[in-house]
Length: 118
Image (tube, rainbow, N blue to C red; front, side, top):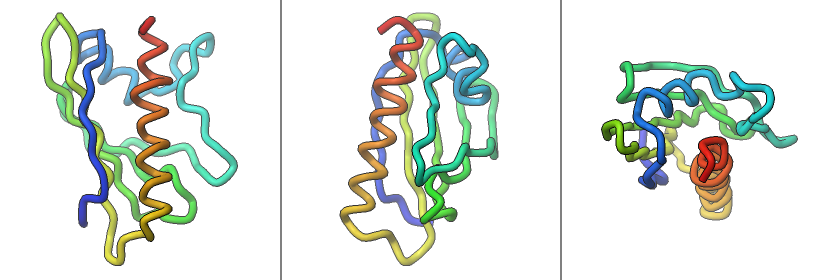
């Protein structure tokens, strides 16, 4: 698989809370953050390593081969959360890569962050 995008940002809660939010994305119906669009599907959870790694299947129906990897580091003072998009060859065109990156930024660095009060 090849990497087509990655970004790391801090999240205010500790890794165990971010890990739980990624493994159970809409566990709190009062604060859902993972709303899928018409051309998307709800991901399934793949590989996990407690509090440090989560992988999701693809959000995008058009590219079901995408793997989304989340790497978490930090302590009780917060979490550094990196998402990485991995795809099989051939990679998507630049426009779709841009769309996927923007969507991940919205989901993780906006929607998820807002559920933690940021």
